[in-house]
Each structure stands twice: as C-alpha cells, then as structure tokens.
Amino acid sequence: MSLIKSEELFSKLAKQSKASSIREILKIIQSSDVISLAGGMPDPTTFPVEEIKEICSQILTRDSARALQYSSTEGLLKLREFLFQWLNMDAKKYTTDNIIITSGSQQGLDLVSKALLDPGDIVIVELPSYLAALNVFRSYGAEMIGIPMDSEGMQMESLEDTLEKITSKGKKVKFVYTISNFQNPAGVTMSLPRRKKMLEIAQKYDFFILEDNPYDKLRFEGEPIPSIFSFDYEGRVINLGTFSKILCPGLRLAWVSGNEEIIEKIATLKQATDLCTTMLNQLIASEYCEQGYIDKNIESNISIYKDKRDIMLQSLEKYFPEGTSWTKPNGGFFVFVTLPEYIDTDEMFSDAIKEKVAYVSGSSFYADGKGKNTMRLSFCYPSKEDIEEGIKRLGKVISKQIRK
Ligand SMILES: Cc1ncc(COP(=O)(O)O)c(C=O)c1O
Image 1 (cartoon, rainbow, N blue to C red):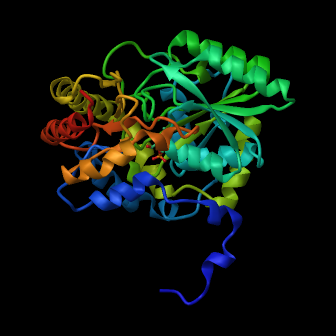
Image 2 (image 1 turned 60 degrees about the vertical axis):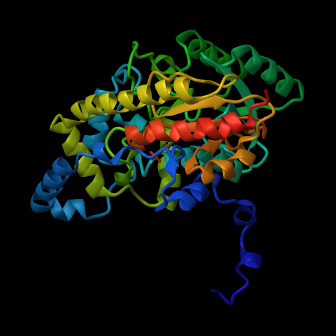
C-alpha cells in the first residue's frame, strides 16, 4: 500500500507501459497444476550446475578481488576474445572492439534502440515477432511496421513494397529487426537468398539490420546458414547473441557485435544504465568456455530439445483437429500454430486454463494487432510427458471450437 499518488508522478513512458501478457500468464500458472506450453524458459536440467560450482569456487579462491569488483563497460577482454574466435568473426573486418558484453540480449535490444531511435522513427519487424523486443521499440516511441513471413522468413517483396511506400512519403526506416534462426515465436528460419536480399535492400534504402540470434546454435538438423552479419562488409548489421539458451539465463550474459561507432555509442549508453556487466558472471562464462565445456553443453542441449520438439510435433499430429496447422522448426524452442480464422485464441485462453493447459495467444506477437487465430507453443521447459499431455488437452479445447 502506498499513500503517495505515484501514477500522477509517473513519466509518460511509465504511464504507457503495460505488463507483458506472457509475464501475467506465467504468474497465473506458476505453482498450479496447469501444464504450461507458454513460457520460453530453458529446461533447468540443461544448466551445468556442477561445473559452474567448481569454476565459481576456483575464481573466488584465485581472483576474488577482480571477480567482485566493477569492470570495464565493454566487458571482459578474455571473454570477448573467446567469442571472436568461437563465432568465427572475420579478422579482416573486425577486432574484439566490435563486441560488447551486455546483461542479457534484452539489454542489447534496449541499448541499440536507445542509440538509434527517436520518437516517431520507423522500425520494421517480422509478423509475428518477439514480444519483449516490440515492447522495447515501443518504449522509445518507434512506429512499428510489420512484414509477413512464410516458411523462408520475412517476405522480401512485401518488404520492398513497404519501403517504397515509406520513402514516397519522404520518411526513412531506422532498422529492420529480424530473428533469423528458429524465430521467436514462429520457429521459422530465414533462407540464405532472403538473407542476402535483405542486406541488398538495406543497402539500397540505407538502414541498419538488427539481427537477433539467441537460438542459432540450437540447430537439430540441416546445415547452419551464415548470419546476415557474417556477409555484411559495411557495418550495417548489428548482431545479438546470448548465453541464455546455451548455458543459462540466470548469468544474464550476452553480446552485441557491430561497427565501431555503434559499439562505442552502446558502451557510453550502457554506462548510464548499469556501468558494467557483472564481472563474476563474465569470469564464470569465460572459464566455462575456455575449459571446453560450452560446445559439449550445446551438443547435449540439442539432443534434449530435439527430443522435446519431436514429441510436440508427433502429439500435434495425433491430437490437433483438422483445420489447424503449425510450423516445423529445425531448432530453437517454439512451434507456432494457426487455427481457423474464426477462432480467437485470446478468448479461448480461459477454456484452456479450465483444462489445465496454457499457451501464448498469437496476437501479442503481431505489431499490427492481427494473428488472433494463432498461438505460440514452447517445447523447451515442460517435460516430455507434459508436452504430450498438454497438447492432448489443448487439442480437446480446440476441437470444441471447430465448426463442423
Ligand atoms: C528473440 C529473443 N531475443 C532476446 C531474448 C532475450 O534474451 P536474454 O536472456 O539474453 O536477455 C530472447 C529471450 O527469450 C529472445 O527470444
């Protein structure tokens, strides 16, 4: 209880901000017997607890003064050196100065937006896209324009048409935001020709590409596709990576790679945000990677998540009624389901909760407010048994809505 009238004193930004629907859902279903196919949290059995305990103890014995101290805003050089090699960054184009460590990719999204956006600036996003990124762009007053996707990612003709319209009004786009691998929420991966085309279009219309890549290492099958960042030679692509899905999100460790000017700007802005990313956590991740654990952990994560993906896809085939369709991701955490047009997944949510299953309704991911008949299902967190049971329950809920 507070006696002060806080609302009157809130900033415009705070007044406009709404709690994320996903967070609200997670609150409802936490500690209940609802099977949640909603949250995008990693499976905690993938967290390498023993190795982290051991490494943490080594660091605190050997290097506590440094580990518990403030550190440079750009982040631990040793960790940036590791990332440079591990990500195969091209030494002809980049150095470790082109990487900054952030407190999660969410901070990367915030700092890039802070560096590039003024109120009214245009950002192009995928339809659908990552809700928490849309919230960041919105908080900086961006106007978001959505471009539809298909099985190869963002549709380039539609992007060009939209850009023609925007430029004919004398306006300009600041950046296109894309999650090029195993997209959140759609599970779709952008094809190589589309990646090349997107860069070409960015050159023609002169904007940045913000490529967010938290899932790229979690590929279950097929050959990896080079990131847009890897074939950019102008410093036009800003790339975000994170340890959240391949190590653990609790360390809050991620990185932004980009041209020197943008990285310097981000460093200046980060000083006003948190001064630096936690040194202890950077040392833990750095040691973990140097001791050769990271690739092994990723290998084991892939096998765990692939099994779960398979169970989800098999269960969807078995329990979902005719008239429904879904994406078949080759990696990552998510499957995106489309129901017949007349079903509203927001309205259906309370029926699902009665049947003790939860999902995220698709409309929250659409910058244009559409997607009412879609939903995101996550296979990352629940057990295999819960995935099958959850899909069975959801199939029942949807079947009741299907018009014969
Ligand atoms: C597309 C995307 N970007 C960024 C993030 C945030 O990741 P982090 O934990 O590094 O802040 C997530 C987390 O789910 C995500 O799905």
